[in-house]
Image 1 (cartoon, rainbow, N blue to C red):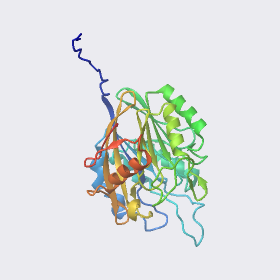
Image 2 (image 1 turned 60 degrees about the horizontal axis):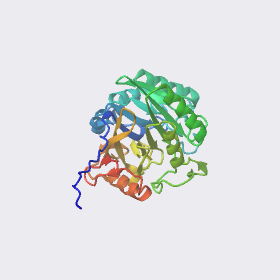
Image 3 (image 1 turned 90 degrees about the horizontal axis):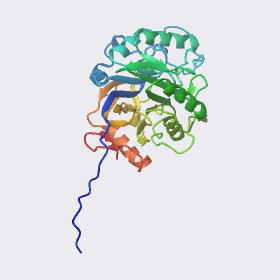
Length: 338
């Protein structure tokens, strides 16, 4: 007996519509007045010129502010006759962040307190004056309203003076409380080992100079479980791979974006990626792309037509997240779910 063919109809869920198109970069330090001679030419007025179009072409833009904005104070890191690896960028340079379209900044990192608590307060005042919302010290959350929705940034670092990336239970509690008050939550972290050989995301706790720099996989997954919609990493000074977890994107490190005068920029330390990501209204990852940048001379950021940063992110993603990594196109470096 023959039965008539029955056409089967498979209904696929429509992809979510983009709600927010955000761009994000890693470490930004626009020069330091300590030690002398480490500020850029023309008092920094043209330092970001080549990358301004990249930064401003977004609805919101994020950066990690690697060091304070202040004009006075002393540092315990500066000892007589020794090397002073501490940063103090003039407060006037905050206007360059505003001109570059930076809306959200992390002040949670190992250089934020280089010149003490008074300098932290100067930094926060300078950012406030130039309309850059910030998060860093314990309990601080940057808040914005975007298209009628509440958006929050919570920045973490491996320090008791900041929201602490090593205290995962407390991080989850903070994210849950912020999510309950708003709609979209972005988490950033400054963590992981540092340097040329720190491109891989490891399982378990990473250490640098014997310091606990966080279990970044566990932290990122935990804050997403608690309600975070996007996780942005920085700190290793090199790029790292990217993962999708529960339809949320995790960028484990974006590299050195603009670090004038004091950073080793050799090899992979000298190139980075600018991440563009589109999120749905409910925070799900929709799409994205990687734009490669490099630093020339003492640390002048430029677009990188050779795409070294994006190529490295793609390679590292395949190595570290063979099943959960975001899909990265070979030529356009556009991001998509697998």
